[in-house]
Image 1 (cartoon, rainbow, N blue to C red):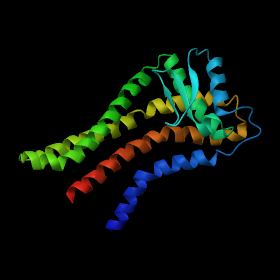
Image 2 (tube, one colour):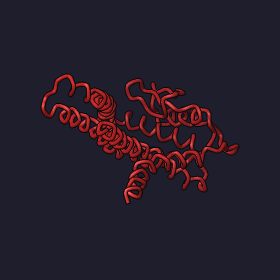
Image 3 (tube, rainbow, N blue to C red):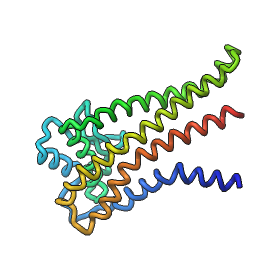
Image 4 (tube, one colour):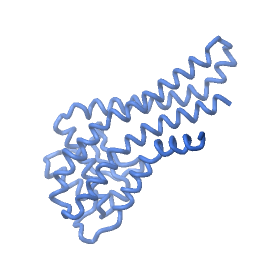
Length: 224
């Protein structure tokens, strides 16, 4: 019974990330019938939408739009790729640039919240590692519980922030990118494009679940 529960929990936590990666990989085959790469489509869409000052760059940090630097950043396979995944991911990130250009308030809130999530997760990891040493040094009653509770709050914050950014991701995918893609992607590829756009949004679900799984891992370590 315990094994079944563990398997189910692992499936819940890991499947969204596995599914998203599978969808992106499934549509990553090079296409000779596509006129340009992901980077070329992104640059074209930015110019078509009249968004000035935003550049398209290659990155090793994962596909994203940086509102502070005003950069659409694409991984090498999507920057140079001429595939359904490459052009769809590029359109999704341009969707964020369009949100920024139009003053879409949730995007600004998301940028602040993602920064909070990253700091919270780092703080959570530090607290978890420091908890036993702090308890030994201070010997305060309940000291270890307090530190663990702080770490739980930190990881929980990271998980919550990743989840509440989902509306921004779905808006970039389906309200911004999808209408544009319909003009550039053949009709028979549109179901696949919708799957890729959903996978782009669900990377944040995967990140949220990863934060929760990371918390559980640390709690198991501290119980030993």
